[in-house]
Image 1: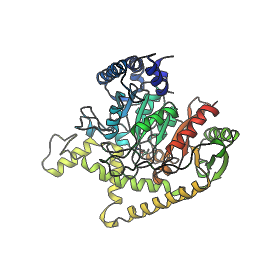
Image 2 (image 1 turned 90 degrees about the vertical axis):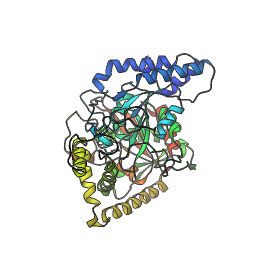
Image 3 (image 1 turned 120 degrees about the vertical axis):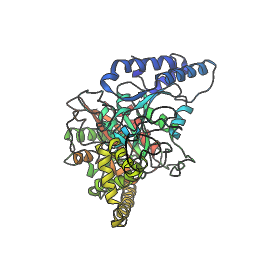
Image 4 (image 1 turned 30 degrees about the vertical axis):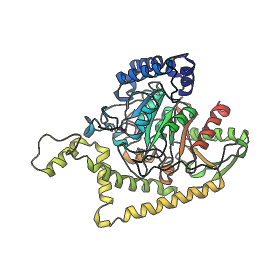
Length: 474
Ligand code: GLN
């Protein structure tokens, strides 16, 4: 077996036992990139020279017996919305095609502090707006499990890098499913953390009420390790929160798993529902209690998400005006034309659609009515989940209604927006959700499930996910 096919946990142990070196791990990953990247297209920028230096440094330190973080020497792909000092950071947009940040995002500093090896910046839907990765203005990413299909989005490059062994771990970002959906389409594991658990300082924003950076990897154990490395309060991000202790500890015999009623609906491919139910059955066989749980208001999830997202995206994207950084149009007669031409040339169709809708919804004539009502309902939804978690420990559901689509198969934006229907709930309620593979369908494509927990339940989610991987997976 190639080193690039192993998990971060296995590689970390091998490094410590000196059965391989960080440079050899990197070499194996670079070999995969050389063989597959022209087909997969996971990366916008490769940072091979940096990676080689980092790997060498890890090897030198290990040779001297220096104690390193558990992820030291592990190759990682970083979604290209995460600012990296001196390294191109594009958000998949022409407007930032040549943008080189002067500072690092806090999460990237944490990756560096852990002595991880940075392989490159991963492709994404433009400004993380999308579900198939096809809205990237800069790169075309395909699903390593089937190259005729999309990897999912928006963190499609991150998921494809892990699934294609072009990285061992990856960072994505999840606003309304962007870590979880590509994880499901590519057959990898991804976590949306509790809102505020991971710093967004230096992460190019989409919708600030939802954005969270999330870890991705081949196994739950790997995602746990990466989450532990990146989580924590950050004085540079006022929305970060200290970890509150989650009172329950995992015991399969005491676990009550809620089957999330509304998310097993007629839109979900029966093969996916059946596979998730098989997973539920295996938990039951090991002693867990299973209950059907209803979370009300699901019919509001999509419109609410769209209202809040477009209002916040329109505001966040206002900074891209050609004045301070990023693309600037060549010719203009006054400042208005400068703004207008720069933004018309720089943004692709998806950001434009959302900027127009968000600007309309937040226009003065409505006096904030849409926004106020949306936040009122967001609170109601958080309460609905709180109530659900009085009856069960965690909720389980399909991650998506369908397996990965063919490239170009889905073009209607409304249908694309609906793809994330299973993902919006956790985003609206600010709670964590773990996406993990639970089998293959008859087309041999990965099926993804989602386990949703109360705030701060990440450790519990990982325990349950690891139990599944160890004891139930067939
Ligand atoms: N697919 C969703 C959207 O396009 C989610 C995006 C995300 O989580 N960044 O809004």
